[in-house]
Length: 497
Ligand code: SF4
Image 1: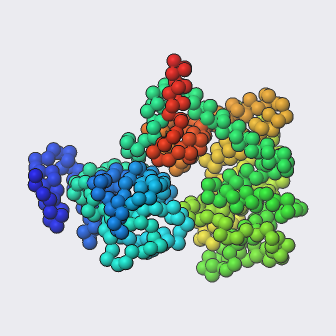
Image 2: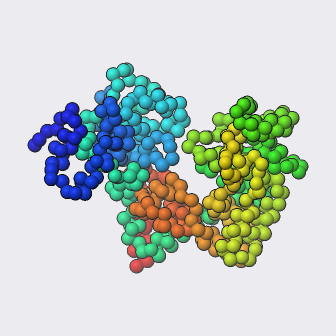
Image 3: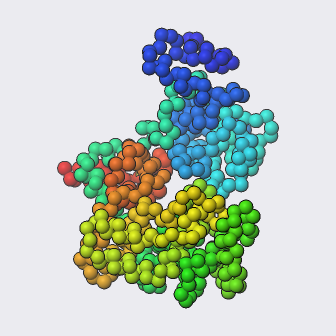
């Protein structure tokens, strides 16, 4: 066997790995890949290549040893992050003599990047249990950082070969051997059976949401249950709780007929998101801030005990359109309308074909042009060249399937209005698919073995898949340990045939 010398120029390594003659396609491909991905100017692999090596475990897995000499066994490398934070989530591993555990993995070239990149101060990184690096540092081990695992002595092939083999493997797609144990039984279902399974799971999700709204309505009233959930939906995944907290105290801070701007100022003050300093650069932002403070400084003492701490909010990884300041501005418009709840109730009973009915709901939630928010993403951001709506069409789908339809459905159910309940179900199951999200992307690949969005053509199918993730994946781990779902799917199929 011919041994490779890593100190040789990259070209020579490639020639040894893939001796001529190579086929024409390999020849096309090579120049496109090698310069960019193999090594940087210091002769280190690109970080993306290290991530691909980790994902595909192109390692001599029996000789993984941490920087402080502990043996590491990787049972699952984790799932690549689709929205910031550590590179891989939910990996399963055993370090030294510890019991096997689940946690996140961060990949960097050097151990020092843990602090240099600010991961030590970022709460999103608190579940990292392994810091995978290219090579260890000569400096002392940082005892406050996660365990360091260097890879430079553990690759299963030369970097040149790994680069060619992995570069075109998109990190965002899940390798087949990392799919869930349910992927095989789900693949054996017919299209009709899979649709029926997702529909049943979606119906369960609708009923669960509706049940929580009923409980809230019993302890307050139907309108409050609706507002709680509208606010919560505006918080998206990151800020659902502080938004809910604001909604829950609405009766204290929403009194009298107020303009949308007055409510905005109050909500920004209550949320702790009204900046105390002017930008001194953005004239329009500073004018907005001055006017908002003119209102808030007079009210602040009265609401002192409902003001949220700034730390209650999460900003990392947020798109500007989803910034809580902007979402609060939208909520202020809805509250200033005074008739939003009545309009939603009328929408439920309006006899319209589905597409028209969807358009009408969009109109109900959409607000007119706002002098400030149509032109700025946040309180301090620069003026945009084109106005942007406060609510995109895609968000209306989220509001419909997560809030409006469950709320109208449970009201109809509680009031014994069977016709209305069925109509709400019809609308729920016919609603076109919502925007994709990271949970769906991973679930499509892990459970259904496809990254393609048409696999879930309706919002209800998406909801069904998310319910399966909630019920099964979130109670198991990346290895699908003790998950009953594959057996249930097999049993269901056998009973149906
Ligand atoms: S945990 Fe269960 S439901 Fe989730 S992917 Fe694994 S087998 Fe499927």
